[in-house]
Image (cartoon, rainbow, N blue to C red; front, side, top):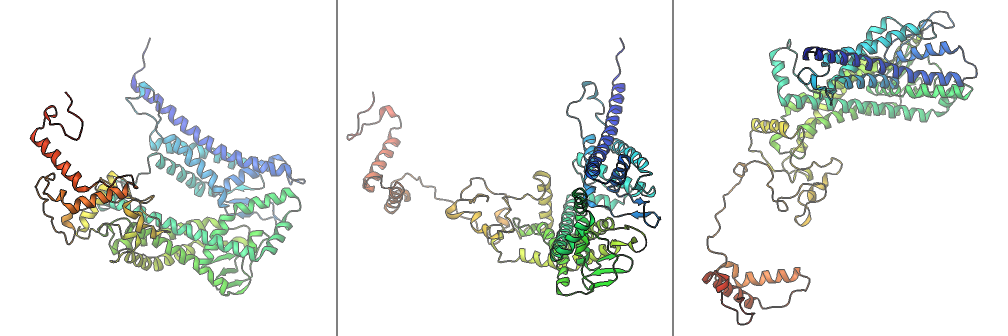
Length: 591
């Protein structure tokens, strides 16, 4: 019999893993396409008067699935006979394909738990690059097949948009999945980058600052989306009648109304971005000759009949309710500043670990830049052409909305971050800083070194004790030490209640430190010593009697102390128990 060498086994296992990753990409794409096809077929079956047969419905489902990846569609059946483009992507549909591609790449790149014994000495599983390429290739195979099948249907994909942005979206989702499987590492920088950049990325503090900027940018972008959704909801509530008329007029049967409702639900994130662009100032286009801003609606809009478009403001100059939309970018800028200051000056850290004003400004500016870039990216796909002529421009303009978000968050966020930092680091302190040990004597370099050690040992953002929430800062007064020396719930134990010393600087580093003298070396059990003094005995006896709840008898403290003194002297005179003299008032000695 012939035994295979370990190299052949390793190559065979690696090939099987790559094939498995390719199949995972195909299955992820097929699952997304199949689920959307089932939904379209249910609507087609329930329709009493379908426009086409099952083949047309399947081709339409394939086109809608490609639209969810960012592909531009073409609608050939128009009244004018000229094919009309459809470039507006329902953002809610994007979540499904992106999540499936991300999960397939993550599962393919994760190391296997149970490995073959023959492959343990070699390479187990595909490499990260191999998993990424295999999953992306398998997914794009299904994309190419769906695009070819949709040709000749009511909605087919534009071939120019299959490479960009469809392939880019799939590759980005797969890369994010591989990055997640690797533990979301930050760095190292590419070898072709400058040496200064590589050294900066390798530092722990740089990673902490970059993560703080990313979180702040995400918070600002989320605030913009939430504020835009609130504006749309308020506008739809004010124009509920026209929205209901548009909904009922688009379809007369219940199956058509369900289809309209599903389409409106898929376009809700788009509407939120439109509201955010309106609050930022640039607004959005309603055709080639109309623009809606807080200052008013200029031009004659070309509005299709759709329920969500009932939230569009009326023509004319903007009033006070329209100007109130400017509160959305202000709230986003304050959110960016707040999340940046939470890392710049933590509530449960000493002053020496706070960032300098320069670092706070730089992190806030990076967060503002990230918020502007994210806003520009999302608004670029939130709008697009939905026809020819006047409907060729529909939605917010990304190259205006992105810089507007950057300016708002930078101009308001940077001063707000500096003011919040000063408020947190002020000398008197408030409830959240009263129990924080001051370490002003530590230099900044030493504090940064301690911060790097904590990053390696404990993880990011962990300090001694549990941080308090921003919505209840007053709990810090009694939560740290508790009432009567007891630690409150959810707060670290006080030094009096815990025997473990809290980590912190040496006492010599604190200002106003005075060394204490040593305790007296006299034996504590001497009768004439301070322990057996009359006042001390009476105080101890009264405390014990009060704590017993009335169970202790009123014995004279002097007699008890005298008996204790005699017993101690007898123990020192004859330490052996068998030779101890018997007490005349007690039982006899044991033989």
